[in-house]
Image (cartoon, rainbow, N blue to C red; front, top):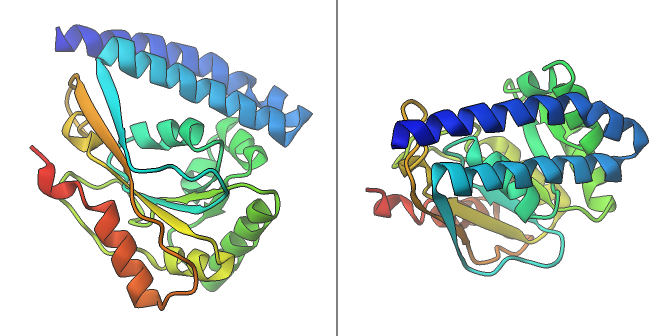
Length: 230
């Protein structure tokens, strides 16, 4: 049954995604708002397939802010990159440069307002990231970063990349850590399994704290579910 669920998900989600992604430039040429609505439609389609084809349900804990903030999320799978876009009201998402180079999709992502940064973390790249993040804040949008830099396996707790500290300082916005245990159901390799995934909004970390304190609080809250991994 799990194999059948996975096959149906791959068939329906990826087939539908080809059409959605290929038509995204049309929305991007209209306006950023149109592109944001297009992206949200994709994430809702993804959520439908995850719920009804894979059998994965979401349990939300904590309080989601109603004003723009800097979100710092755990990253264990593709699931949270799409789920959080829709759930958080189309935030500006920090993406690695390789994704922005994908034909069609990369153009749409930039028009959506994604904040593109390369993994080398050069001074120029950091300046570009900060400039784009400040532009997103000026538009009244939240900013979403996966501060560990890449997907990690359940139980892994790598240190935060320097980009988070830079955004925390330059944006001077409240920061909300997000923890998730999706990795126990959505492995990097192998079949996805039905079950309940927890999405936990941590306590707000106020702006202006010393870097070490801010990073420690965010890191702890992001990894609060790691000890509960099966």
